[in-house]
Image (cartoon, rainbow, N blue to C red):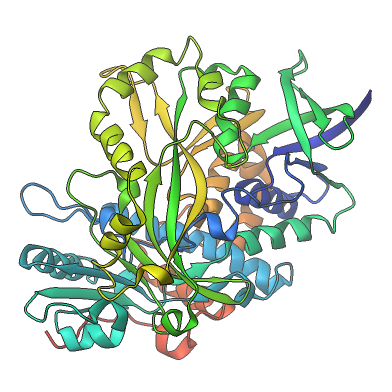
Length: 510
């Protein structure tokens, strides 16, 4: 049996593994890196362009990131945090573009206005107050607000055509929003990794077992699904970035920190329009408010998507349920993930999540007619024949132990690292790939702390100028970083969108 030794083993060839491999190679090019992927090519699951919305999540348009409290106050802290984290991702991509290590930025990120749209007097009032709260900080000074139907018609003509003229409506707009092709971006990172002699990519290869020896090194037993060849890889550090299958891999490792974790799989679906006469009239990502009582995954949005130079419109998401952890997974994935250590959290979440289960059942039972009815809230004149249903990527939401309730369902992402810092795994979903670089920096902070403190800090600061500083509180630093990112990634005119002094938000015709 062939046996290979490597410094870094990356399980999964998606956005997260690609980013960790890329960052580590910048910090120490001598690292030998091996990437394992069970499919016959990279970035074919959740990172694939059609398996996600492609929104560069910056909290410009996502209303669920600014919840309204019972007392009417709007919590904007999460919006600032998400915007700052996305800026970290942009900083790394800008650094790699300027270095010539990434493809042209137009191949993976394009400027696409981010807009919020609401109707009804209460929602209009909410959106105005949200705008006023956010634009007090230069992070959101680009945001415009209007409750003038004619201005909104200019911004999003499809949304306004055929709408009742007596209906109160409002919208916000940020022109420096982005559409990101995470597949193209991740493929670019992997292509750059391939330029190193000590990088090894193994496709069509499954990890059968993962065990740790007395020397703290890990041995992965792998099998090539095409040749049937079985071999071993001995690694000093293992990162599990296998999307929905990460939970299964974490369980294979047997680390104590992974005990008690379970997963709740949710599939996504989109209505897709490829009719060029319609597509060319909508250039924006338009987000609305989720229905009362629905989960965060259900926020409706009408999106421009730009994939490999081709534009399309997506509307959704519509949730579905399957027991698979990956689109290419097995219907037995959920059953096989049940262990003695996670049964109690899974059971507790199950009995307390009847609203979510009811929501999923309702979503699964929808017809094309009922989905089109939902779309017409955002595109009143949409015609059934212009839209088809497409299945997006599979998501596995985190279920974990909770001392108070026995189990807790999480909708975010979580890094789980072993006590000896030789293995780290990423579980969860949104905002996911948009904050890939901050997530990977967390892995490095947890598992490479000594090298970060003693050797790597200057390089990290070169790549990420805001590292270990708050660009929320340091406005001058923020403005400098945003200016550089917009210029380097060709996202806007540097003079128009890179002010040297904080600007005031713009309220249009209201």
